[in-house]
Image (cartoon, rainbow, N blue to C red; front, side, top):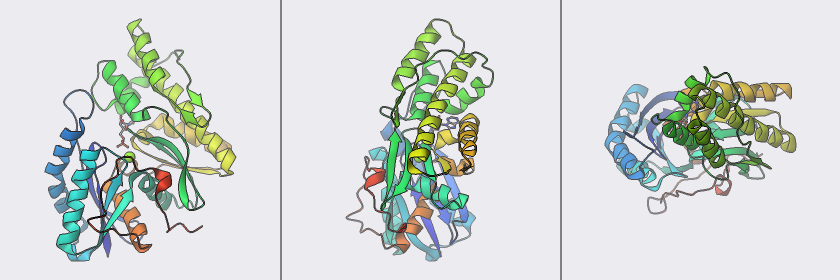
Length: 328
Ligand code: AMP
Ligand code: MG
């Protein structure tokens, strides 16, 4: 039996089918790309409503499964953009009723941890979760996934996207800044914004745009932004490892596709004698397979929901959701 998972927290609509051992049998995704500017939640939700039915069909077909093979239907309940979450939840409820299968709500951030954890084979790693809307260092402790440090303002991916648009580019900014940064040579002075275990990005955004207005070139700006902000993330991850007495780190989120960030975290972790694992990029970004896998864990631990109780939770906190499958 397999679990089907639906992801729709932000710009990506995705359906994944996962087997017994986190084997990803299929993954069908479609990302909303705004013609200009950032994501408009309503427009992204309209996109998801349009594509999700065919993504479900594609996911079933390429996994070679029929509805009768589906054990449970999981969906991302939060955190995320309300209209986008509701699009995925509505499809999940409908499938659950039509197929007479249990409905399993999943926390999106916990799903990033769980897919990385199972793929890495690491028992109890820390997660550096660096995505568009979220930037958190997460570790398990006493019954919950705890947020040890996080952004005080915007997510690192949103920061990169806003910056790139401010420099004349289009969404998404992260991959474009990564390409531009390879040509940068000079490290320009930018604010280094670490506050204890937390980080902040909006001051760096203002400072970078100010340097650009004074004539700094894009490759140097991109290089300096990556060097500065990825150092900040590496620093808080290292502090979390030291405080928690852990030695391994897994990565998640779209920004975790970045080679420089992967390299910096790997160097730090290995210098402490630990292991760093980054999932394949298709499973770092938002995807239905991580929702399906976490849905399986939750379902096996007895966590299902009635349709009536399955309202989406746009501000659902990582540290407020139960994770009874982790009884260590
Ligand atoms: P997510 O919210 O996890 O789906 O990730 C989307 C975010 O990841 C967007 O803000 C992208 O700009 C960012 N992103 C994707 N690829 C890269 C990359 N190679 N380097 C940096 N950021 C990236
Ligand atoms: Mg995400």
